[in-house]
Image (tube, rainbow, N blue to C red; front, side, top):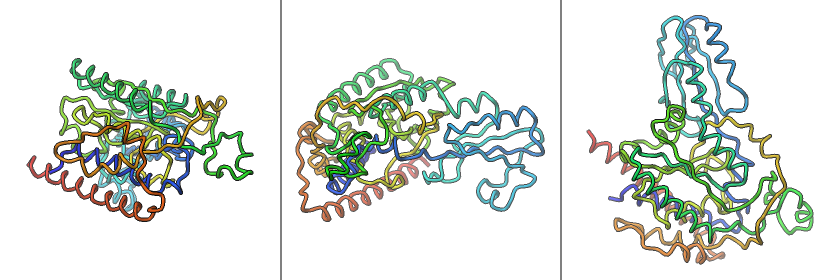
Length: 388
Protein backbone atom coordinates (compact mmCIF):
# COMPACT_ATOMS: atom_id res chain seq x y z
CA UNK A 1 0.00 0.00 0.00
CA UNK A 2 1.45 3.35 -1.00
CA UNK A 3 1.47 5.94 1.73
CA UNK A 4 0.05 9.38 1.04
CA UNK A 5 3.51 10.95 0.95
CA UNK A 6 4.44 8.63 -1.92
CA UNK A 7 1.17 9.29 -3.72
CA UNK A 8 1.82 13.02 -3.50
CA UNK A 9 5.34 12.57 -4.83
CA UNK A 10 3.99 10.55 -7.78
CA UNK A 11 1.26 13.19 -8.25
CA UNK A 12 3.79 15.98 -8.74
CA UNK A 13 6.05 13.89 -10.95
CA UNK A 14 3.11 12.91 -13.17
CA UNK A 15 2.20 16.59 -13.53
CA UNK A 16 5.72 17.36 -14.65
CA UNK A 17 5.70 14.30 -16.93
CA UNK A 18 2.58 15.56 -18.70
CA UNK A 19 4.29 18.93 -19.17
CA UNK A 20 7.43 17.33 -20.50
CA UNK A 21 5.45 15.14 -22.89
CA UNK A 22 3.89 18.13 -24.64
CA UNK A 23 6.70 20.61 -24.11
CA UNK A 24 7.27 21.31 -27.79
CA UNK A 25 3.60 22.36 -28.22
CA UNK A 26 3.19 24.15 -24.88
CA UNK A 27 2.70 27.82 -24.29
CA UNK A 28 6.04 28.95 -22.87
CA UNK A 29 4.54 31.22 -20.22
CA UNK A 30 5.18 29.63 -16.80
CA UNK A 31 2.19 28.07 -15.05
CA UNK A 32 2.29 30.59 -12.20
CA UNK A 33 2.21 33.54 -14.60
CA UNK A 34 -0.36 31.99 -16.93
CA UNK A 35 -2.64 31.36 -13.95
CA UNK A 36 -2.26 34.96 -12.80
CA UNK A 37 -2.91 36.58 -16.15
CA UNK A 38 -5.37 34.25 -17.87
CA UNK A 39 -7.29 32.17 -15.31
CA UNK A 40 -10.14 34.08 -13.61
CA UNK A 41 -10.62 32.82 -10.07
CA UNK A 42 -13.49 30.35 -9.62
CA UNK A 43 -16.29 31.69 -7.43
CA UNK A 44 -17.33 30.19 -4.13
CA UNK A 45 -21.04 30.08 -3.40
CA UNK A 46 -22.42 31.87 -0.35
CA UNK A 47 -26.07 30.95 0.19
CA UNK A 48 -28.00 33.07 2.68
CA UNK A 49 -31.23 31.40 3.85
CA UNK A 50 -33.94 33.42 5.58
CA UNK A 51 -37.61 33.03 6.49
CA UNK A 52 -39.43 36.22 5.58
CA UNK A 53 -37.84 39.59 4.72
CA UNK A 54 -34.25 40.28 5.72
CA UNK A 55 -33.77 42.95 8.35
CA UNK A 56 -32.20 46.26 7.37
CA UNK A 57 -28.90 45.23 8.97
CA UNK A 58 -28.94 41.86 7.19
CA UNK A 59 -29.58 43.60 3.86
CA UNK A 60 -26.62 45.89 4.49
CA UNK A 61 -24.38 42.91 5.23
CA UNK A 62 -25.46 41.18 2.01
CA UNK A 63 -24.99 44.38 0.00
CA UNK A 64 -21.46 44.83 1.35
CA UNK A 65 -20.13 41.92 -0.74
CA UNK A 66 -18.08 43.67 -3.42
CA UNK A 67 -17.21 42.80 -7.00
CA UNK A 68 -13.52 42.40 -6.09
CA UNK A 69 -14.04 39.02 -4.44
CA UNK A 70 -14.67 35.63 -6.11
CA UNK A 71 -17.88 35.01 -4.20
CA UNK A 72 -21.30 34.38 -5.72
CA UNK A 73 -24.12 35.35 -3.35
CA UNK A 74 -27.54 33.69 -3.19
CA UNK A 75 -30.32 35.01 -0.93
CA UNK A 76 -33.05 32.40 -0.55
CA UNK A 77 -36.36 32.71 1.28
CA UNK A 78 -36.94 29.19 2.59
CA UNK A 79 -40.70 29.66 2.35
CA UNK A 80 -40.39 30.25 -1.40
CA UNK A 81 -37.64 27.83 -2.44
CA UNK A 82 -37.87 26.57 -6.00
CA UNK A 83 -37.52 22.92 -6.94
CA UNK A 84 -34.06 23.61 -8.36
CA UNK A 85 -32.97 25.29 -5.12
CA UNK A 86 -34.20 22.33 -3.07
CA UNK A 87 -32.26 19.95 -5.29
CA UNK A 88 -29.07 21.95 -4.86
CA UNK A 89 -29.32 23.04 -1.21
CA UNK A 90 -31.74 20.55 0.32
CA UNK A 91 -34.81 21.24 2.44
CA UNK A 92 -33.52 24.11 4.60
CA UNK A 93 -35.37 25.23 7.73
CA UNK A 94 -34.67 28.65 9.22
CA UNK A 95 -36.27 30.45 12.12
CA UNK A 96 -37.95 33.77 11.37
CA UNK A 97 -35.53 36.68 11.67
CA UNK A 98 -32.42 34.54 11.26
CA UNK A 99 -30.00 34.68 8.30
CA UNK A 100 -28.30 31.31 7.95
CA UNK A 101 -25.25 31.29 5.68
CA UNK A 102 -23.54 28.35 4.00
CA UNK A 103 -20.24 28.57 2.11
CA UNK A 104 -19.61 26.17 -0.78
CA UNK A 105 -16.51 25.39 -2.81
CA UNK A 106 -16.65 26.48 -6.49
CA UNK A 107 -18.75 24.23 -8.73
CA UNK A 108 -15.66 23.79 -10.94
CA UNK A 109 -13.86 22.09 -8.05
CA UNK A 110 -16.34 19.17 -8.05
CA UNK A 111 -16.35 19.06 -4.26
CA UNK A 112 -20.02 18.08 -4.08
CA UNK A 113 -22.89 19.82 -2.35
CA UNK A 114 -21.59 19.67 1.22
CA UNK A 115 -21.09 23.11 2.76
CA UNK A 116 -17.56 24.13 3.69
CA UNK A 117 -18.95 26.28 6.53
CA UNK A 118 -22.34 27.05 8.05
CA UNK A 119 -23.34 29.72 10.55
CA UNK A 120 -25.21 32.95 11.17
CA UNK A 121 -24.40 35.69 8.67
CA UNK A 122 -22.76 38.52 10.61
CA UNK A 123 -20.38 41.28 9.56
CA UNK A 124 -17.56 39.52 11.39
CA UNK A 125 -18.14 36.16 9.71
CA UNK A 126 -18.47 37.72 6.27
CA UNK A 127 -15.21 39.62 6.80
CA UNK A 128 -13.45 36.35 7.66
CA UNK A 129 -14.82 34.71 4.52
CA UNK A 130 -13.72 37.37 2.04
CA UNK A 131 -10.38 38.48 3.49
CA UNK A 132 -7.66 37.95 6.07
CA UNK A 133 -4.16 39.30 6.84
CA UNK A 134 -2.41 36.25 5.34
CA UNK A 135 -4.40 36.45 2.11
CA UNK A 136 -3.52 40.13 1.76
CA UNK A 137 0.18 39.27 2.09
CA UNK A 138 -0.18 36.48 -0.48
CA UNK A 139 -1.79 38.84 -3.00
CA UNK A 140 0.86 41.50 -2.37
CA UNK A 141 3.74 39.05 -2.90
CA UNK A 142 2.22 37.54 -6.06
CA UNK A 143 1.67 40.98 -7.58
CA UNK A 144 5.29 41.80 -6.75
CA UNK A 145 6.34 38.90 -8.99
CA UNK A 146 6.74 35.98 -6.59
CA UNK A 147 6.25 32.65 -8.35
CA UNK A 148 4.32 31.25 -5.38
CA UNK A 149 3.77 31.89 -1.71
CA UNK A 150 4.19 28.81 0.47
CA UNK A 151 1.71 28.89 3.35
CA UNK A 152 2.73 27.05 6.51
CA UNK A 153 -0.26 26.03 8.62
CA UNK A 154 1.35 25.78 12.04
CA UNK A 155 0.56 22.87 14.36
CA UNK A 156 0.76 24.87 17.57
CA UNK A 157 3.96 23.07 18.57
CA UNK A 158 6.71 25.75 18.35
CA UNK A 159 9.51 23.20 17.91
CA UNK A 160 7.77 21.38 15.04
CA UNK A 161 6.69 24.61 13.36
CA UNK A 162 10.16 26.14 13.46
CA UNK A 163 11.73 22.94 12.15
CA UNK A 164 9.36 22.79 9.19
CA UNK A 165 9.86 26.48 8.40
CA UNK A 166 13.65 26.07 8.29
CA UNK A 167 13.41 22.92 6.19
CA UNK A 168 11.01 24.54 3.70
CA UNK A 169 13.19 27.64 3.32
CA UNK A 170 16.27 25.45 2.78
CA UNK A 171 14.57 23.46 0.02
CA UNK A 172 13.15 26.58 -1.65
CA UNK A 173 16.57 28.20 -1.66
CA UNK A 174 18.05 25.07 -3.22
CA UNK A 175 15.53 24.65 -6.04
CA UNK A 176 15.68 28.35 -6.93
CA UNK A 177 19.30 27.74 -7.95
CA UNK A 178 18.31 25.49 -10.86
CA UNK A 179 14.67 26.17 -11.76
CA UNK A 180 14.52 28.53 -14.73
CA UNK A 181 11.94 30.44 -16.75
CA UNK A 182 11.12 28.66 -20.05
CA UNK A 183 12.85 30.12 -23.09
CA UNK A 184 10.77 32.12 -25.55
CA UNK A 185 8.63 34.29 -23.25
CA UNK A 186 8.19 37.85 -24.53
CA UNK A 187 7.28 40.98 -22.59
CA UNK A 188 4.13 42.96 -23.45
CA UNK A 189 6.24 45.58 -25.22
CA UNK A 190 7.98 43.08 -27.49
CA UNK A 191 5.30 42.50 -30.11
CA UNK A 192 7.94 43.00 -32.79
CA UNK A 193 9.23 39.55 -31.84
CA UNK A 194 5.79 38.18 -32.70
CA UNK A 195 5.73 40.00 -36.03
CA UNK A 196 9.16 38.59 -36.90
CA UNK A 197 8.02 35.07 -36.04
CA UNK A 198 10.55 34.72 -33.22
CA UNK A 199 7.83 33.99 -30.63
CA UNK A 200 4.15 33.06 -30.74
CA UNK A 201 1.45 35.45 -29.59
CA UNK A 202 0.46 33.04 -26.81
CA UNK A 203 3.97 33.41 -25.38
CA UNK A 204 3.61 37.17 -24.81
CA UNK A 205 3.06 38.29 -21.21
CA UNK A 206 -0.15 40.20 -20.56
CA UNK A 207 1.04 42.19 -17.58
CA UNK A 208 4.10 44.16 -16.59
CA UNK A 209 4.69 42.37 -13.29
CA UNK A 210 8.35 41.29 -12.84
CA UNK A 211 9.01 37.80 -14.22
CA UNK A 212 11.29 35.74 -11.99
CA UNK A 213 11.74 32.47 -10.09
CA UNK A 214 11.23 33.42 -6.48
CA UNK A 215 9.26 32.11 -3.50
CA UNK A 216 8.17 33.55 -0.18
CA UNK A 217 6.67 31.89 2.88
CA UNK A 218 4.04 32.92 5.41
CA UNK A 219 2.88 31.16 8.56
CA UNK A 220 -0.64 30.82 9.95
CA UNK A 221 -1.52 30.22 13.56
CA UNK A 222 -4.10 27.43 13.28
CA UNK A 223 -6.10 29.02 16.11
CA UNK A 224 -6.06 32.59 14.74
CA UNK A 225 -9.76 33.61 14.50
CA UNK A 226 -9.16 35.98 11.56
CA UNK A 227 -7.71 33.06 9.53
CA UNK A 228 -10.36 30.47 10.49
CA UNK A 229 -12.16 30.56 7.14
CA UNK A 230 -8.93 30.57 5.17
CA UNK A 231 -7.74 27.47 7.04
CA UNK A 232 -11.02 25.72 6.20
CA UNK A 233 -10.57 26.54 2.51
CA UNK A 234 -6.99 25.22 2.48
CA UNK A 235 -7.69 21.97 4.28
CA UNK A 236 -11.30 21.15 3.40
CA UNK A 237 -10.89 20.10 -0.23
CA UNK A 238 -8.69 17.09 0.61
CA UNK A 239 -10.83 14.55 2.52
CA UNK A 240 -9.32 13.47 5.83
CA UNK A 241 -6.22 15.68 5.54
CA UNK A 242 -6.40 17.07 9.07
CA UNK A 243 -7.35 13.69 10.52
CA UNK A 244 -4.45 11.96 8.80
CA UNK A 245 -1.90 14.49 10.08
CA UNK A 246 -3.16 15.65 13.48
CA UNK A 247 -1.00 18.19 15.29
CA UNK A 248 1.38 18.46 12.34
CA UNK A 249 2.35 21.53 10.29
CA UNK A 250 1.01 21.50 6.72
CA UNK A 251 2.38 23.39 3.71
CA UNK A 252 0.37 24.73 0.76
CA UNK A 253 1.72 26.52 -2.34
CA UNK A 254 -0.45 29.45 -3.49
CA UNK A 255 0.06 30.99 -6.95
CA UNK A 256 -1.87 32.72 -9.73
CA UNK A 257 -5.03 34.41 -8.44
CA UNK A 258 -5.04 32.42 -5.23
CA UNK A 259 -4.81 28.85 -6.52
CA UNK A 260 -3.46 26.11 -4.24
CA UNK A 261 -2.52 22.44 -4.49
CA UNK A 262 -2.66 19.52 -2.08
CA UNK A 263 -1.09 20.07 1.34
CA UNK A 264 2.37 18.73 2.19
CA UNK A 265 3.02 17.30 5.66
CA UNK A 266 6.43 17.43 7.35
CA UNK A 267 7.20 13.77 6.65
CA UNK A 268 6.79 14.40 2.88
CA UNK A 269 9.00 17.50 2.78
CA UNK A 270 12.07 16.65 0.70
CA UNK A 271 14.05 18.54 -1.90
CA UNK A 272 12.97 15.97 -4.50
CA UNK A 273 9.28 16.65 -3.86
CA UNK A 274 9.87 20.41 -3.81
CA UNK A 275 11.76 20.12 -7.10
CA UNK A 276 8.75 18.34 -8.61
CA UNK A 277 6.32 20.95 -7.29
CA UNK A 278 8.57 23.80 -8.39
CA UNK A 279 8.97 22.28 -11.86
CA UNK A 280 5.19 22.23 -12.28
CA UNK A 281 4.56 25.74 -10.94
CA UNK A 282 7.44 27.33 -12.89
CA UNK A 283 7.36 25.15 -15.99
CA UNK A 284 5.76 25.96 -19.33
CA UNK A 285 1.97 25.88 -19.21
CA UNK A 286 1.37 22.70 -21.20
CA UNK A 287 -2.39 22.66 -20.58
CA UNK A 288 -4.07 26.02 -21.00
CA UNK A 289 -7.54 24.80 -19.96
CA UNK A 290 -7.86 25.59 -16.27
CA UNK A 291 -10.17 22.72 -15.38
CA UNK A 292 -7.63 20.22 -16.67
CA UNK A 293 -5.04 21.51 -14.20
CA UNK A 294 -4.87 20.42 -10.55
CA UNK A 295 -5.70 22.57 -7.56
CA UNK A 296 -8.47 24.75 -6.23
CA UNK A 297 -8.95 28.51 -5.95
CA UNK A 298 -9.25 30.32 -2.62
CA UNK A 299 -11.47 33.28 -1.81
CA UNK A 300 -9.38 36.42 -2.37
CA UNK A 301 -10.58 40.00 -2.12
CA UNK A 302 -8.62 41.42 -5.04
CA UNK A 303 -9.48 43.03 -8.37
CA UNK A 304 -6.79 41.12 -10.23
CA UNK A 305 -7.40 42.54 -13.70
CA UNK A 306 -6.78 46.06 -12.45
CA UNK A 307 -3.96 45.11 -10.11
CA UNK A 308 -1.74 43.41 -12.70
CA UNK A 309 -1.30 46.68 -14.57
CA UNK A 310 1.91 47.75 -12.88
CA UNK A 311 5.58 48.47 -13.29
CA UNK A 312 7.85 47.56 -16.19
CA UNK A 313 8.81 43.96 -16.94
CA UNK A 314 11.97 42.87 -15.18
CA UNK A 315 13.94 39.74 -16.12
CA UNK A 316 16.98 39.55 -13.88
CA UNK A 317 19.18 37.54 -16.25
CA UNK A 318 19.32 35.84 -19.63
CA UNK A 319 17.12 32.81 -19.01
CA UNK A 320 17.95 29.48 -20.71
CA UNK A 321 15.19 26.97 -21.41
CA UNK A 322 13.59 24.98 -18.59
CA UNK A 323 14.85 21.46 -19.07
CA UNK A 324 15.11 18.42 -16.95
CA UNK A 325 11.65 17.59 -15.73
CA UNK A 326 12.20 14.45 -17.80
CA UNK A 327 14.68 12.78 -15.41
CA UNK A 328 12.64 13.85 -12.42
CA UNK A 329 9.49 12.46 -13.95
CA UNK A 330 11.05 9.25 -15.15
CA UNK A 331 11.98 8.57 -11.54
CA UNK A 332 8.32 8.25 -10.51
CA UNK A 333 8.66 4.45 -10.65
CA UNK A 334 11.27 4.58 -7.88
CA UNK A 335 8.93 6.32 -5.44
CA UNK A 336 7.66 3.39 -3.43
CA UNK A 337 7.43 2.40 0.23
CA UNK A 338 11.10 3.13 0.77
CA UNK A 339 10.75 6.68 -0.62
CA UNK A 340 13.00 8.33 -3.18
CA UNK A 341 16.75 8.76 -3.08
CA UNK A 342 17.35 11.14 -5.93
CA UNK A 343 19.70 13.96 -6.81
CA UNK A 344 17.10 16.62 -7.54
CA UNK A 345 19.56 19.04 -9.15
CA UNK A 346 20.58 16.44 -11.69
CA UNK A 347 16.94 15.55 -12.26
CA UNK A 348 16.05 19.11 -13.19
CA UNK A 349 19.13 19.68 -15.30
CA UNK A 350 18.90 16.57 -17.48
CA UNK A 351 16.10 16.12 -19.97
CA UNK A 352 15.63 12.52 -21.08
CA UNK A 353 12.25 12.87 -22.78
CA UNK A 354 12.96 12.48 -26.53
CA UNK A 355 11.25 15.13 -28.62
CA UNK A 356 10.47 12.55 -31.28
CA UNK A 357 8.50 10.45 -28.77
CA UNK A 358 5.91 13.15 -28.16
CA UNK A 359 2.80 11.03 -28.68
CA UNK A 360 4.18 8.07 -26.70
CA UNK A 361 5.07 10.31 -23.76
CA UNK A 362 1.62 11.87 -23.86
CA UNK A 363 -0.01 8.45 -23.56
CA UNK A 364 2.39 7.51 -20.77
CA UNK A 365 1.52 10.65 -18.88
CA UNK A 366 -2.22 10.01 -19.19
CA UNK A 367 -1.74 6.38 -18.14
CA UNK A 368 0.27 7.43 -15.06
CA UNK A 369 -2.36 10.01 -14.14
CA UNK A 370 -5.14 7.39 -14.32
CA UNK A 371 -3.13 5.02 -12.14
CA UNK A 372 -2.46 7.84 -9.66
CA UNK A 373 -6.12 8.74 -9.42
CA UNK A 374 -7.04 5.10 -8.89
CA UNK A 375 -4.48 4.73 -6.11
CA UNK A 376 -5.71 7.91 -4.44
CA UNK A 377 -9.35 6.79 -4.46
CA UNK A 378 -8.42 3.30 -3.25
CA UNK A 379 -6.31 4.70 -0.40
CA UNK A 380 -9.09 7.08 0.68
CA UNK A 381 -11.70 4.28 0.71
CA UNK A 382 -9.33 1.94 2.52
CA UNK A 383 -8.53 4.49 5.25
CA UNK A 384 -12.20 5.38 5.61
CA UNK A 385 -13.15 1.74 6.14
CA UNK A 386 -10.38 1.28 8.66
CA UNK A 387 -11.66 4.26 10.66
CA UNK A 388 -15.09 2.60 11.09
